[in-house]
Image (cartoon, rainbow, N blue to C red; front, side, top):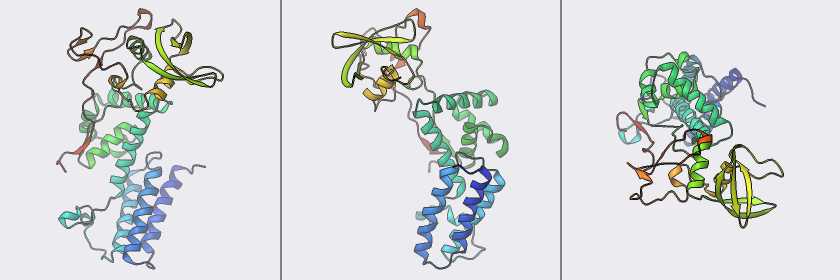
Amino acid sequence: MWLDAKSQRHAAIEVAAYLYKNDNLWIDQRLKVISMCLPSLFSFSAPLIDWPESDLKLLTAVWVKAYKNAWNLGKSTATCLFTIPRDKGGLQVKLPLGTLFTSVWGNLERCSQFNDGTRQRLALCYQEALQETGCLDVLELQDVSQHLSWKAASTNEVTFACYLANKLDILVEWDPIHPDLIASAPDATLSALACQVKLPLSIQIEGVMLTATCLKIGLDSTMTILAGDIQYSIHLDGQAQNPGLPSLRECISRSCGQARWLYELSGMATDPETDEWADGVKAIRIPQHLGIGIGTSKHGPRTVSPQSKRGQ
């Protein structure tokens, strides 16, 4: 059972306080206990509960005291000693702010990878963050977030993640709702592309795994596939209903588990000299009743990587 946010925060602070007061271990034992307990305990709940700035400062103070006690350092030892890299004479300890940054961004990344409702919620949160700040992407949001207070930034998960990145002087390039992601692509685009390239699918029918080919799109959010000499109708999205067949997205997830981008799907490796490509973008023919879809880039996405503004 989940404790309330206040209890979670107090539990993390109490553990840090206990480790600070524990004098019955050798230095290496103290460091091992602290490094195993504090970051893992804090990062587990950090993305899921609200951490006011005052509570995080209190946790940081107790956290630093625990490390000072472990190394038998005096109270007057400068805190910056813990954040300086080891190759420059520091102790290179990850403090609560850095741990919170890693946990929050890690949680957003996990949400973006699964089409189980969390991704849809992330998309709404992401769009709200951009609309509220008047930004076009995450990079602009990180720049704008420096003018927000901790409390104001924490009202939106994506804004708060950008706020933490700015406080740590880290530049994060991330596009969670990229139109060329399989999970982000509209049903109309994904289904039209599957039919256009005759995407092969692995599907379980009556307890037997078969290989099927995408044929055509129906008028009721369904697709006709061909398995052997028999045609079947499957839904474009949603979960399979026993004894129904899995949806197109479920089949793609099972058949192309390693693919995240549309250009990674089987059949997308089209000769760039053909007329299907224009300026590196593949035109997808979408039935009129499904609305307007999008093109997909043959060259793949821009590299996504967190990097420090200082180049560290």
